[in-house]
Structure formats: structure tokens, C-alpha cells
Amino acid sequence: MVLGIIGILVSLALLITLAYRGVTVVIAAPTAAIVAMLFSQAPLLASYTEIFMPALGGFITSYFPMFLTGAIFGKLMTMSGYATDIAQTMTRRLGSRQAMLTTVLTTGLLTYGGISVFVVVFVMFPLARELFREADIPRRLLPATIAHGMLTFTMTALPGSPQVQNIIPAQAFQTTSFAAPLIGVIGGTAIFALGMVWLEYRKRRLMGAGESFADLTALERRSGADADVSTQAQSVVMSGSPSRGSESLTPPNHVVPFIPVLLVFAVNFGCTILLFPALDWGYLQEERFGGVTVDERAGVWAVLIALFLAAVSILVLSLKDAKWLVGGVADGARNALLPIFNTASEVGYGAVIASLGAFALVRDGIFGISDSALVSSAVSTSVIAGVTGSASGGMTIALNAFGEDLAQQAAEQGISLEIMHRITAMASGGLDSMPHNGAVITLLMVCGMTHRESYKDVGVITLVIPVLVTAALIAAYLTFA
Image (cartoon, rainbow, N blue to C red):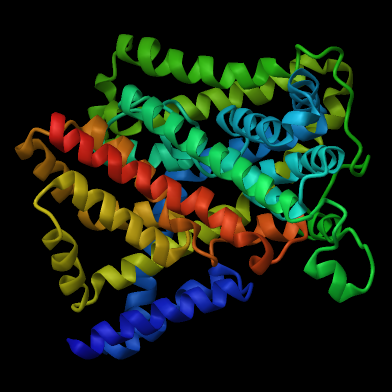
């Protein structure tokens, strides 16, 4: 058993190291799983084909439609010029003096409006860079500012978020994306406010020390020239563009671009609150549908419909260029493949670890931390998300391993499953932002910064503050509920 625990720790260290060094998780996850299997003397081939792959396939089966429609929607928003126009409109309204606030709010609007966190950084970076240049804000704060809008309050806290991190707990607890709206709004507001306080504090401190936007980054100093590293990174990561290259359309006015974004929220809300409860779902009990209930699928279905209709609305609003925009659908579909396979591979890794005998000690340790289902859910999700470097992957692993027990325990303790949903989602967005997190690595690469230059602020914004706010919400609920 001791050897098995050592194997799990070694495999985790290997997974983190490989991810940090840029090895794709599709390769790193099964490699790390093999190490854990060897230490535990588990059968390699059987564990890979009968445990790793079914878990990987199960995640893809459940969430690929969301990744697909989300990626296509994000591609169409970029090609149509809508995303850029929204950012420029927000900039004009708030002004360059509020460069950081403008960046956070615009990024948050696009993320909450349905553009995946894997895509929005490429939309926001060029605009944020110019805002920072005009306001002469040190460039090292660019990644943290963009991260605040895409990886914190809009990803897990605000009710109705179409991001997958807000949908996964809906599957486990049979809730909806609008679960526990009051807790979500309070938590989201607190994370937003504390994040802005930190960013403003850091801006004053760095500028007071004489640092400015014009200072070369470490990457630029090493290259010996003021090269636009971020542009090179963007061309590598976001490969495959339509015939017009990187060209995008010009919206007819500054109102139209907001329509698809608002449509995502309106349709998601309408399906969840009004349409689905009014429909007869009795046919779901037929054998061919596996006995699934609408409560188990409502969150996914509502977001799926919302993203699909929002994508269609872009084509309708740009009829004269619809043929060219349709050409980008294939690129959007391709952009969905790597993110979901990365996450699914982490889920497969977690399934293998959970199948090992030594994992029973880990499970007992997590449940031994507290008798509260709420605390156990938050801790298990946050720890595993930190280990895998993925909020969605860590949450899926935790809920697959503990979800039924946590739901039963919550019912016995009188804890609302909606509260379980919201706290679990928020907990996934804390320790996941360790240095090996894929989104963090991509963000730093696109912004042309190093971990040494910018991770301190990214860590405070996306890790420290969300963890503290989530812990405070748990304490408040257990004290006053």
C-alpha cells in the first residue's frame, strides 16, 4: 500500500513536470498513469483499455457537443468582427484611463457570453495590449488582468455561465447552470472586487518603482530585439484560418455584436427556467435513452441550444458574408478537439488513480477532513484540480469518484444540492491555476511573458482570491444556514 501511495505521488509529479514543459496532456496523462500502475502492480493493458479509455470516452461523450458549439461560436464571433467590436465599444465607453477595468469587464462579458476560455485570450490580447500601451501600465500585469476576466468570476461563480466548469456539477447534482444564484452573485462580486483591488495595488506599486509598458520583457531581452513574441505564439496555437487569413468583417453598427452574446444568456435562461419545466419528458424513460432524467441533462442541453442559436444568429446577421463565415465552422470544430482531448485525458488519468487500491487512503483522508459534505466536495475538487492543472478535469475526477456519496451525505445533512453545485464549481477554479495549468501557460505565451515575470499576479488573481472567497462562503453557509 505504501508503494502504491509513492507511485501516485511520483505519477503526479511527472504529470505536472511534463505539462509544465509543454508536453501535451494527451501523452502526459497516460504516461503518468502507467507510472502509478507500475508502482501498484496493476495490469497495464487492462487498466488502459478498460479504465483509462472508457473514462476518457465518457467525458467526450458528455461534453463534446458543448466544446464543439462553443469553439464554433468563438470562431464566428472572431471572424465576424463582433468580439473585437465589443471590446472596442467597451473601451470607448470606459476610456483608456480604466485600461485594467475595461479589459476585465470586456473579457468577462465575452466569457460569460459563451466564448470559451481557450479562445477569448486571443481576442482580448491585442486590444488589451494597446490599452496598456496608451495608459503606460507595466506589461507584466497583462496576463493577470485578462485572467481575471476569463478564469475567475465568470467561469465558475456567476449563475448561468455557459462554461463547462459550471455545467459539470449540474450533471452530478442534477441541478442547472443557474444553481444557487445568490451565493454565485455574492461570490462572483467578491472575487471581482478583490481582484481589481489587487491589480490596482500592483499597478501603483510597479509604476511607483518606475516600471512602464516600454520596458522589455525577459523574452524580448533574451531574443535581443523588441519582437512581438505573442503574435508568433498566436499564429502557432490558433492554426488553420479561412481563405481570408486573419481578416475579419466589420459589423454594421455597435449594437449588432452584442446580440449573439445576449442570446446565449437569454436562451440558456429561457430553456432552464421556462421551457424545459413545461415540457413532457416521459419518453426519456424508454430503454433506448438509458433511463436518463431531464434533471441530469438540462444544464448541458440548455447551454448547447443557446450556443447553437447564437452561432446561427451570427450567420443570419451577416447574410452577405455567410458563405465565408461558414468556411470558418470547420476551423472552429478543429479548435475544439485539442481542449476536450486534453481534459478527457486528465479524466482518464484520474479514473486510473481512483481504481488503485492505494487511492482508498486518499479517499479516506479527504473525507476525514470534515464531516460536512460541502467541505469534502470543495476540498476534493480543489485538490484534484490542482494536481491535474484543470478545473473541469479535476472536478470530473472528484465527482466521478465521490459524487454519489457527496450527494447522499448532503441530503442527510440538509445541504441544498444547488449550494453543492455552486461551491464545487467555485472550488474547481482555485488550485487548478497552478503554474502547470494549460490555460495559464497559453495565456503567458500569448502575452509574451514568463512565469517569473507574471505568474505571481496571475496566481493571486486566479488561485489565492478564489480559494479565500470560496472558503469564506463555505464558512458563512455552515454558520448561518
